[in-house]
Amino acid sequence: MKNVVITGSTRGLGFCMGKEFLNAGCNVTFSGRGEAPNENLKSLMELYKDQTFYVQCDVRKIDSIENLWNESAKKWKKIDIWINNAGVNYPDDYIYNVNQKYVESVIDTNIKGMIYGSQTASKHMIEQGEGQIWNMEGLGSNKMMVVKTILYATSKHALTYFTRGLAKELSNTNVKVGRLSPGMMATDFILNQPERSALDESFKKIFNILGDKPETVAKFFIPKMLKNTQNDAHIVWLTTTKIFFRFSFSPFIKRKVL
Image 1 (tube, helix red, strand yellow):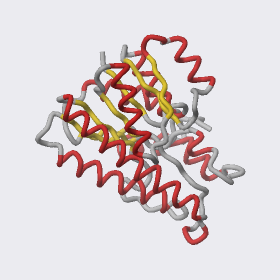
Image 2 (tube, helix red, strand yellow):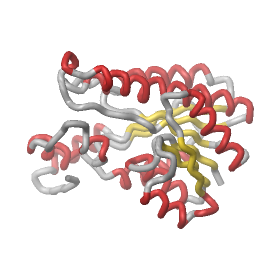
Image 3 (tube, helix red, strand yellow):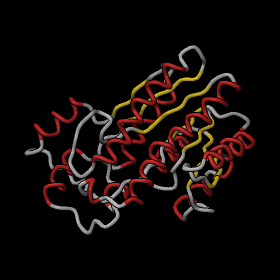
Image 4 (cartoon, rainbow, N blue to C red):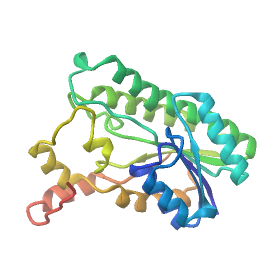
């Protein structure tokens, strides 16, 4: 039975991954900025009372991340898997129009929060003798450039470089580091961006071809993570082959994600 900690796991992919880990028999620490879990998470935790734990955590603060580790380690005795999943987006716009608060939010959460989580987990996992750290990729990790998203994409490009570098630094230890690449998902992260009133039809068309629900991606990720023995592992959901297949058959196979 593995003990798992997931940052930013009160909803979306983080929540769905936690649910799949529970289904696989693991113990899971859920976390978010709220003082208490939301109603959906409360319901899930009631079903898995002995396997779940909630710790408030603001990943922008290293003391908060240290507390997340310490409380989880106190509860489960050992942490086998740590997932830096917390992330934020901002309204699609040219960078010269992006408000300072969004710049700081993206950098503080997506980059600094991921670094703080990786520092904390790697230090303690070296002390306990083993463990795995997983970081969540996104637009920009594969160097794709899309206008009006470059701040977010920059944060994910940095995440990929950092994660691969961390794997190299830890290559002589029993701590494994990996990346998760989920592709396009129908979550609040994408669909309810600040100040976005509606999704245009062209976006919907592409999303219905390439997009997936977080439950689907989580079901794919968790078995592979639990079986993983490799350092610098990379688990990719939306592969090039899958993209080619979906576009090729889109006239015949109608998918409706949105």
